[in-house]
Length: 120
Image (cartoon, rainbow, N blue to C red; front, side):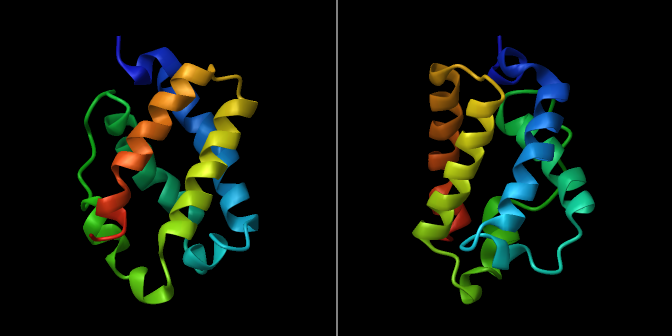
């Protein structure tokens, strides 16, 4: 069974993102990277990516992480911002009752994307 299925599939991804993005917008380190972003459209693009990353159906047709985040490097995207982003997602998963071992698996996936997101 995929991590996607173990976490609850599409409803769980949707709920996690619904809870996550308001936190992102309220966070002093992370929120500047989302200034002017249509969050509904972002969720529409992020949902198939998160689904794919968790081992669910792959319908993602967008750009890769490196390309999507490249322009943010000039705005200060760095390890501290990446860490804050990951911590926010961890907090959401914890509040949604996701077991520690599954949160660890999600964290490992996110940490594995660090080089791509930060264009290293």
